[in-house]
Image 1 (cartoon, rainbow, N blue to C red):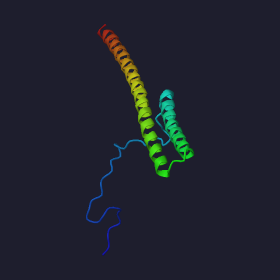
Image 2: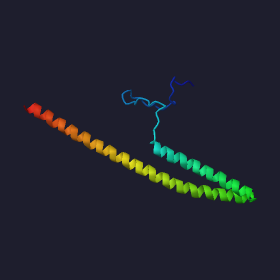
Image 3: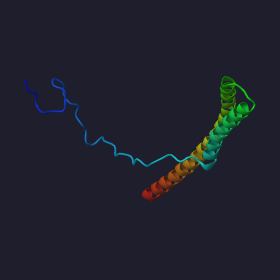
Image 4: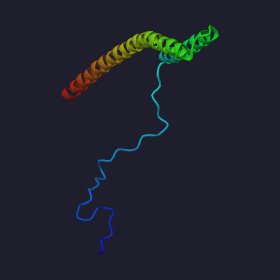
Length: 128
């Protein structure tokens, strides 16, 4: 039994491709840049949790604690410090987003106001 030369499964129609509706591909190196303050807070949080874990584990080891106690203390320290720093980072990021949103809305209102003024001027020219 021979099948017709096609990439589609026999007995099924291949989906038709529309040439006009395809979107251009985005560049692969396009990234979202976070504000410097947000980047700093996230980096500081990560380093803070890591440093806390290392210090707690080292101090527990130097005090002669068992491996299970070292693990438990380190895990609790990571969770507590991680949650605190996450909350701080969340508040800073939320504030940053609110400021950016307000700035965008103000620029949008100014643009719409300018556009209405231009349309009114254009209408006045057409009437004259």
